[in-house]
Image (tube, rainbow, N blue to C red; front, side, top):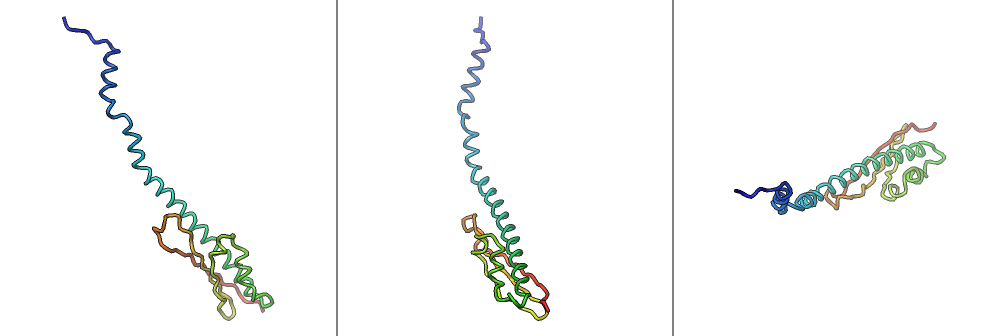
Amino acid sequence: MAPVRTPRAAGRTVNRARGGDRGSTALEYLGFLPVLILIGLAGIQLGLIAYTAQQAGTGARAAARTAAQEDVSGSYARVGRASMTGWVAERSRIAPPTGGDSVTVTVTVTVPDVLLGLLGDRSVEKSATMPRDD
């Protein structure tokens, strides 16, 4: 007569066979983790670019509005920087106003890089035009 295997013994046999695979999911996750981190940093970088562009546009409009007024036209750069967030204002360059009947001011802001230099130096440029006060 052949020995009878109990369900408990069969379960142990299955566990011993799977013992070599133990921890493989954790290793696969660790291998994929750098890709997930890179995707997260790319999302943050896109958000920084969008925010910097919005702030540059705000600074350009404020600077152009000020440059269009004859009595305070010399303080256009100060007003443009004051309308932007502190870290964006520190990275901004405001070009002198140009134009005849209207004033155009261009603001260029360098975007901070969180992707460890993969994108290189990036900057955002926004212009605004306002009519001169008569």
